[in-house]
Image (spheres, rainbow, N blue to C red):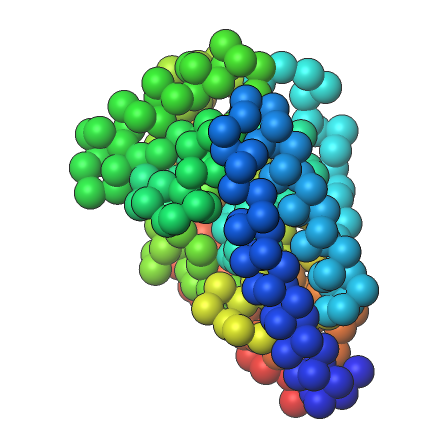
Length: 271
């Protein structure tokens, strides 16, 4: 596929995506007056519409691997890599009715913030570490009672495909959730940033892969919990990105992975 075709498809996709998003926000505002179940249904309707636009205009699809590692019912915690807005729009397709740990500033966005409040997320104040930890732990316990999956991005923000864990370190919120609940923690690796860059207006066709990894063992001390989560997510996400670059020759984003000796491997742009 040529760069020109990718460029044109991306432009057309953005027109449809942002236009559809604006239209849905305006037309479906009355849903906020109804119970959470109605808002959840509207949210899924919107996300399904986005999926159709992605598939047939942009040419972007996704694949799910490792589903056998997810509990069949009840609450659990997913510690996910976060490279793009793309995965946030697939969480309901992946988990049904998940809650998401996110920065509380998102609740202030007109209309969008109201929808977030209605579907019941776990907002945290990142300016106060103590308050953030309290909100994460209390939110996890509340969602455990409601049997809802919990999605947390341990690095706290979207990361570039070439960002190391030194540049974007894993934060302690996931460890507190692990140690204060008896919920299983499942790491999730992905390669979405190659197709939908975190600050890029242009998107690329291809196939995003989500892979659920084996659950973190119970009873581990805090440092070993963090290391296990970080190692599994980073190594598998790197492998998935390498796989995507082998499958789609037009992907040219650099990759970076810190190994256990703090050396860095850089996979640059294809020649």
